[in-house]
Amino acid sequence: MSVHRMTARMRAAVALLTVAMAATAAGCGSSTSDPAADTGTRQVETAKGLVTVPADPQRIVVLNGALAGYLFDLDAEVQAADPRILGVTLEPGEFPAAWAADAEEQGTAAVPSGDDLNLEFIAAQRPDLIIGGGPGWPGQQTIKNYDKLAAVAPTALVPSDLANWQDQLKSVADIVNRPEQVDGMITAYNDKVEQVKSGLKLPEGAAAVWQSQADARPILLAPNTPLATLLSDVGITMDDKIEAKAGNPERAAAGDWVTFSPELLSTVVDAPVLFVITLDGGRSIAQLKQDPAMAMLPAFQQNQLYELPAESKRPDYRGAMSILDLLADHFK
Image (cartoon, rainbow, N blue to C red; front, side):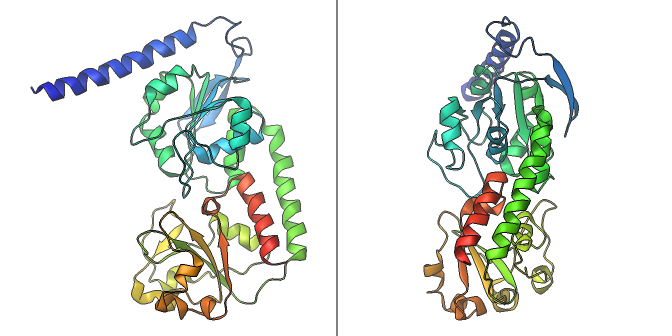
C-alpha cells in the first residue's frame, strides 16, 4: 500500500473522529451554554421519515442556500448557512444579497462549499439542528452524507421534489416549529400578485424564458415550473409548446429546463416575448443581439426582451416578491 493512500485514509479517519468528538461535546453541553437544551423535542416528517428535533432550535446549520432565506423569514436562529444558490456566483464567505444583511445581523457563519461537505466545520458550529435536502447539488450532497450529518446533530432533509417555494416554505416552517407564519407569507404574495397584475401593461403573445450560459447551448425554461408559474400568475401567457417543438427531449424529473439542438432554434424560440436569465459567462441581451441567428427570432425582431436576475430561476419567497417588483417596473 502506498504512502499516499495511507495518508488519505488517515486523513479520513481523523476527520470522522473530529466530527464524532465535536458531536459528543455538543451533546454534553449544560443547559446554560445550550439555550435549546430545556425546550424539549418534537418529531417532524422529513425526506428520511420521522426525525426528532428540538422544539425551539437555537443553533441551526442549513446546508442549502436555496432554503436559508426561509429560515430568516421565519426568524429562526441560523448559526451557519451554505450560501450557494443556483446561478449565483459568490466570493468565499459571501452571502447572497437577498439575505446577507440578515446573516450579518445574526452573526451567521458561511459554510465552506466544495465537492464534499466540510463535516469538521459543521460539527464545530455545535448545531442543535441541521437542515438539508431541497433543490440542486447542495441538496444532493446532504442526502449523500445524511448518516454522517445525523451523527453530528438531528438532521432534517427537505424533500428534493418540492419545486414551488410555497411547499419548501411549509416544509422548513414545520421543521423549525413555525407553521403559523406560513399562511401570512403566502397571503402577502397573493395580495402582491393581484396588486402588480392590476397595473401591468403586458405585450401581446406568448412568452418564454431563455437561459444564457457560458457554453451558449439553447436552453428554455420548461412550462409549469416555479418561475413560469409566477409569470403566469401576473397574466403573462407562457409558451406551453416548448417541449413539443423541441422534440420532447428527456429531462430529469426535477429538471426545469429544456435543452435542444441549435438547428431547432427558430422553431422552438418563436415566442414574441422573451425573458433572459444570464448566468456567469453567458451573453447579455445586448450580446445576444449580435448573434445573427438570435437576432432573427421574433422577440428580437419586436424588441420584446426582458432581463431577470440569475437567482430568479428557482425563486424562494423573497425572490418571488422581488421578481414581482421587477415585473412591475418592466411593464408599467
